[in-house]
Length: 83
Image (cartoon, rainbow, N blue to C red):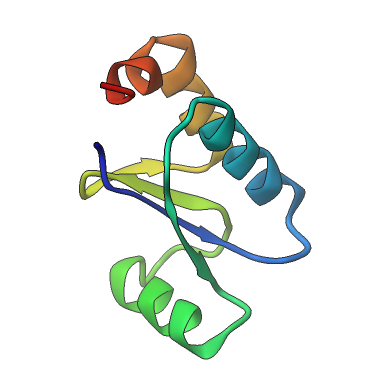
């Protein structure tokens, strides 16, 4: 199973949509809530120049945000992770 990580926040509709898409595909993920100290620190460490959420990583590769995740889905890359 792929290692999926998402940096998100509680009031972010794009974050909710990204998590909904991953769940609909049956893909487990680790959620780092940037409204909490630990999530904010990890976000700053891994993406020091990023200013928007969600930010998604799959197997260590930075996918990007929700729109980028949707492109992965349209290209069948999320389905390939279900293995």
